[in-house]
Length: 482
Image 1 (tube, rainbow, N blue to C red):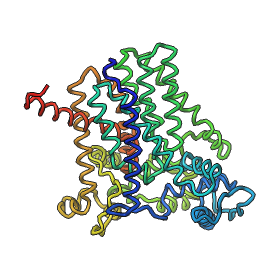
Image 2: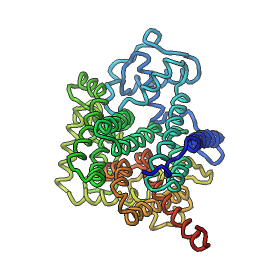
Image 3: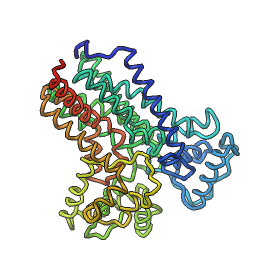
């Protein structure tokens, strides 16, 4: 990488400060409720994980709460949010109702651990501390992204970084905390940056940088387990770059080992509670099984947590997320695809358009819109049937998602163009794109929701930046400007 491609400190500082300003502006806009989904007190999945953190602070452990126990933990969270309780601890907490809570094997504990740490350190609600943590990490991620993308040139790196900073779906998940994955982009971008450094370093330093990449991906596994298999998707790129299969396999194995070691405390906790070394979560088989019900199917499955719980209890398990239930759902999934393999393949193919033209939500709230996107899918109808029947009606109702889908497809086209036009950079590009390719493949095979792929959306920003660069260069050439 030549020196003239590198950004100077003041350039990187500009990206960092701009990212902070954009996050805060977005948050102020969203909070105002002016054509945005105004943050409210509803119990979202993220809020539930924060309340789980208060449960940790109260000495309840990391649990799944149901019925009376769920009401207890929600009541505790509301009292902390309102200021009625400043700081909760094992001595001040009321005991949990018995037989309505179980060890949590469903979600890795990253967000809950943050909530526990911030609440115990600063007292009061942890929401804004987690939000500030996400915003800071995401702003550092913009700096790392700028340095990474100089593999093409500084103009491309600048465009990619600006597109990332102003990427509305990322802002929605980071500033608004629509999901608990707001800090994930930093860990993914940091892992790619470390791999790029490792490719340039000598043997000893190379091991350090690849180990650091594994550590970053391991930390991401505490928030969402999708990305711990990213090294496998980096392997083809490593082979292309180094032309050395042994180097590529050894560095991939090193990252995998460090990821496992990073997640070992979580796996050990799970082993102590259920006798199994679970490094991710116990819901993998249930997710595969649920994925069969996302479209019309011969098994008459309808995807919902309630249906999964009902089936698990009917089979004799306490709930669908228990390690024992995961064995049951693994057998059910195998049974279903053995009965109708073509239906499973059809369900996979039906998700591919969503992967290439993802209709991301980014907080826009049109008051005239009476029907939500989730309502549209609630009846388990074919995803495209209603659009084919009422295209203009659907475009008007979900214009924000349609624009997002178009931009994603254009970005994908840009990525393909880079592969065609920059053959010398294909290996590095495969490494850069590995996080997004990984999550797309996983969720096309399992269960597709756009929010799952937001943390790695920065990969597509490079494709859009390339197209903008090509159009700009062509205009300059026509105008006779060098």
